[in-house]
Image (cartoon, helix red, strand yellow):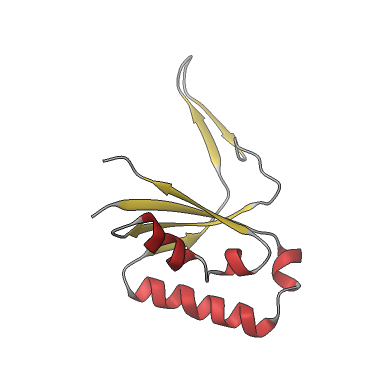
Amino acid sequence: MPRFITIGYGDRAGYDRTDPAVRDAAHAHDASLRDQGVEMGVAGTPLQVRNHDGLSVAQGPFMTSALPVAGFAIIEADTLDEVVEMVSGTPCAVGHGVVEVWPLAQ
């Protein structure tokens, strides 16, 4: 079955201005996805690892975006449309953030 990586972006300000009932429904939606086997988690502090001229490890993200990375998921689904439907109810998608969906090449 095809696998997809999702990256949720969002900030506290967008989350806080989202209606609490919508936020609660989004968290319940995430719990349902986890119950269906979706592996997901909140983003921790990133590291940059390089090893082209000797090992180098640095704190912080390499990529930048208008919103901070909030979390990741690994989803197995038959189609991209199915994944879009699955992530459309998550906190980042409804809380003034965005969710990227990356198909994993087989």
